[in-house]
Length: 120
Image 1: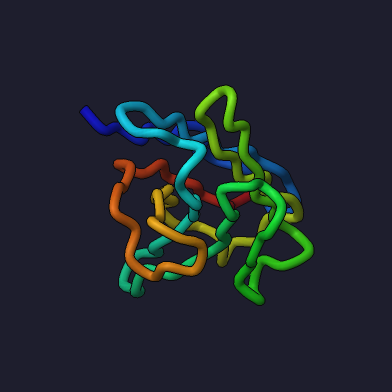
Image 2: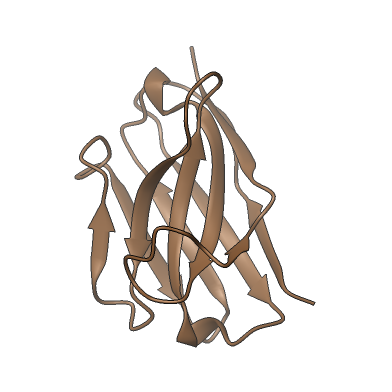
């Protein structure tokens, strides 16, 4: 059974940091690119960051570039999103997705999401 389980969300103050994790099971994690998406209330889902299966090539949305870092541990079947210098506009539900290939706009597998609230 394929599963992607996100964790690490919560309440954080503006300027703070948070690391999200996405643990994968039920498929060969190292064969898939991974992405993080977010959806704020009343807004469309947006791509935050993607990482190639090799862990080297990465892509970021302009709104998070320089503040967020996507990484992965293929041995541990886990993808991460390190979020620094958080802003209130980063408040959203964050989802990880497994992609057939890097740059694929439609992940084949999705997690249930973890909520991040940036507020003082």
